[in-house]
Image (tube, rainbow, N blue to C red; front, side, top):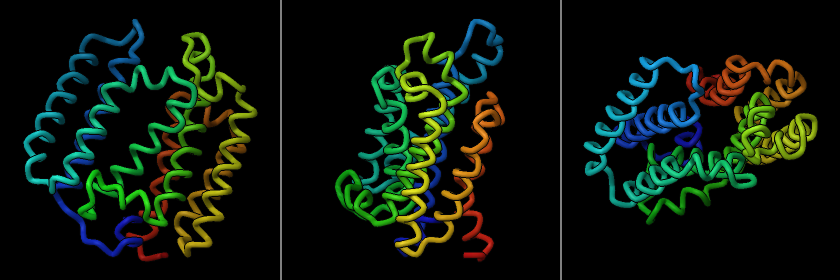
Length: 231
């Protein structure tokens, strides 16, 4: 919704479907890779099945995409497959995930025809969206601080501590909100304000299920406001 408002380009239904299927496949695969010993066998089988179905459906739709957009899918799929290794690199979780989300979120629903969709990343709206995702990822990582440190995953909270990671997230959210206001995008600015408010409650964000859900809801706020014709 935000990208369509910013660019004026119509949605590509196939691109939207591939984006959603890719999200399902990537996050189901990640839940398998991060599974602890207490994960039920039926859950692993379910996640494997969901990953396989989403991947096959996305693959069937891939030839219907413009070639420029299809190349983005290939790069994103490679990033998802390498994610268990990428997140073991310093700032890997913090930068790669927001970049893929921003890139795919701009190019797939409404491609611009450029190779790998590079023009999409030059859209003015890309920067505040990317920064919001970075702040959101930092806040979502708060819950994993202890486990990341024990597993040797160099996430920002594991490297610098919860307080400093929270301060970084707040600073990035403020920057995103300021850029959004300068661009005349009140929905993104309100999302930044809400992320800052959530960041002031790190104990809430550190809850395993509640914290990420709060961040996800906040990141959907601009699209909801546009859909409701409030901005």
